Length: 174
Image (cartoon, rainbow, N blue to C red; front, top):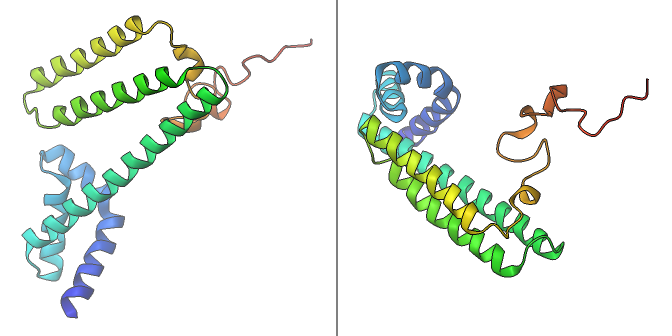
């Protein structure tokens, strides 16, 4: 029971301490889980490897859940585009297949430690995306983009928070 409470406390401390530890670990090159587990182990006199495993498992679980949510939202967005007549069912399937391929390639990037090799792999991904767009020029990519204020960057991107472009389409009557 004491261990469960300690782990619960460790998780609580970890949740609120991530931002601080992230800055420290980024500077030192250590992983967030290693730094956080070390601090919790010292504070509560616990086994660091167990804490680190718990943190990493939780990070993986949360990451997978968020990825599944993004994939579902993307599939819904494409289905709505099919229903609106913007794209065909075949185009939707082509886009979903390509997105899956790109996700696998992005996951592989995580395993590349050499900075130059990682940069080259990123460039290859960008080139593959450009080639895909050129090969599938019948897909209206511009019409599939989220409206301003939606999408990955939220409202803070161009047009959000009253920044440049926030009045797109507005006519000055003066």
